[in-house]
Image 1 (tube, one colour):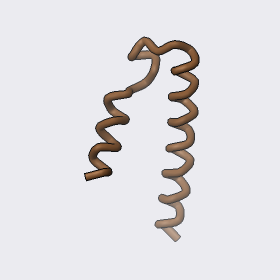
Image 2 (spheres, rainbow, N blue to C red):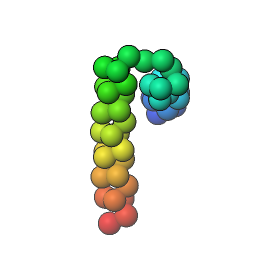
Image 3 (cartoon, rainbow, N blue to C red):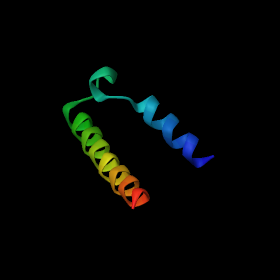
Length: 49
């Protein structure tokens, strides 16, 4: 299932600090994470309406 693969990928990629990423990779990860949280919040709030 696509959703299971999505969550597994997020868990495997993990926080950049733990994986020894370069600063550029850490920044990219942070921006993706913020975008995910923003999108999740939009969907969640829409579901509550």
